[in-house]
Length: 460
Image 1 (cartoon, rainbow, N blue to C red):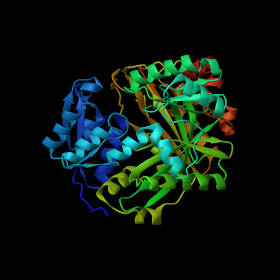
Image 2: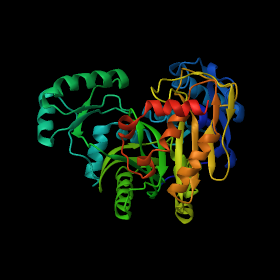
Image 3: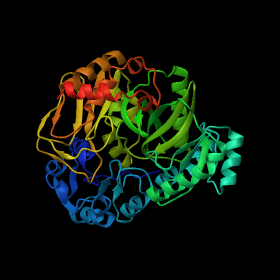
């Protein structure tokens, strides 16, 4: 049984729109905030809107937003009694969670052991399988090419090799020819080692045309767990999400109920607490566990829009030891929400486009939300992720939400740098998307570079 612990001042170990998002949540809970920033971010909005701001190093993330000693020093000097890691950077680093706890501060998130367990994809698969959560046929950590070959022959081609410590598509390779498994394993191991410092690989059956559907769960420190329905995240490029929506338009009530129950069962099996997301591959009416994210997700906004629940405030309440009772009484699903991630990148090649924003106009109107940290004359740095923000719309149904997002994207103006706005404008017109007839390979198979360039020219 957890003891309730008050939080009076939160240091936000992050930057950009998620830092602003946490500041807003804290302000509504009457909690003071401390922003940290690199020298590149001295004039960023999160440094202006927080109650205090502390410089933690130069521009490169390794010297600032990933610099644990500097962040902890900022927390101690400012008198913060809690730390919110946001997403990315240190948000799923177990060693950071342990340091925060040793220093007597509350991490607004799960325990280090939860991060460690679910960050190891092989251990996570094994744990979920024991809990009765469906997983794809696969292996543990591969010890040799011969073992990988034997497993591929037993499971049946195609198979996919994945990094045990992986994420973002790095270290992932599809194998369709049994004789290619040795060279492919070598390449994937080298990629994983370079990206994660760990070359451990595993193998599982490859699903040709899946949907990517995830379940948002909230869990308190008293054993209470509940779900807040699903998000559809199948519009991706290079395994990175581009657009998300809620709810998923192809889930039957029976599959939805089973998927939500599986997520709850998985969280209970590891005695999880805090926000969490269970990600599944949907193959027709069957679904399989992929991974669990032990942090707030970029796409949490679509869940907030259809449920009316402030997930960041809930995350803070859960960290203080509050039970879930109030949420169970207030949660009601309604309508449909869509989120477009707006990035500083070429809309076709996806190459980053840093630079200075010379003109900016965000859309508005009923059912429109913009979460962003940019402003006119803001300089987008090459040091960090290229996401400029998220445009989210809510409407009574999916067709209305699509129309609202089309209108909204048409009002958005960002000049001085390249963005992927044209990609989203093109996507919202595609018949397959409008009909909900797409999978995780939609963009790689259907991307029309010429049409997207025309879309960009039409709004220039």
